[in-house]
Image (cartoon, rainbow over the protein chains, first blue to last red):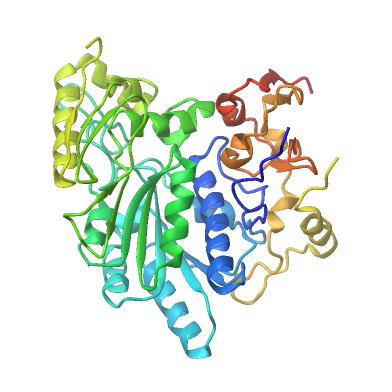
Length: 331
Length: 105
């Protein structure tokens, strides 16, 4: 049997022994992101190590850099919650002055990006620094004890949005930072998911190769905060794509009329017009995604909340210019 | 058996490890977290059947640690010093070449 080559470089920038929970989806995301980044740097500049990382406080910073250890095998700087993008801008400006070739990777969680680091991120994108911002989106402040963030989806349980007699959990729709980033008319903004690793690696490489700022929002599972089984991490992320909860899209130069949509798979029927996706008929109901997670358990007693969730997902796809049909279970 | 890609890091951190405070709290040794043998967290361990493996690399791609590396023939090798036993590899394996078994310690 002919042996295929590994689809990704075997160089490692993320060492084992870090303190992430077993089954952490974000650890997978960072491992793949650094590998993709190093491949892109090798193809563009001939040097796989031509990158540095600035990381905001968050789960992945706390688990990877417990003094005196570090899990990183690349130049790495930890900054406060709000200023990963600002620090990355500074590193990039210094590299430019020194005449060093390469690109900077800024990493933040959904709290450090969507809530606290929004100003710094917007400033970095507006000043057109040559930085890729990677937002690993586990949909709450998992590090400090599962508090809601503005990226928490509708209906989710968190410790600060507990469901009960008068509450259905988080009652506001999710904030899509990738769309906000794209509105800065940056060369590249995309969403990805660890449920489709090959798509994520391709998008990360594309982001690393463009000249100017790029933004990637990656969906990763958190078994602790989502109350999901450890081994189902990747499966849940894949179900999010296949049921339509998590759209995979790319926006180049802020062109909202030519959004590239990655087909979701899972039997969904994609309708195109002139090469552009205009409608998607999903075959898997969103309940399949919800039932694997303890944070949505209370919703099954309130079917009207799940219907409301469907409406919000349809509204989100409408922003992307796609008409979607979401089936109910048994249809 | 292939060597772990982190062998040099493990040797270096065992030789140079110190808890002395550094200026700016700089962690001097890259990849020094390899000194934490997180394999002790494990309840279920992945058992690998080489005959069933089709070398699709999915376990290698999805392992969050990474506790899976590749040998000379590109078969996965499980590093039980670091594997936390999450079971993502067994769940994603298309041919069931990886099964999780309860570990007797």
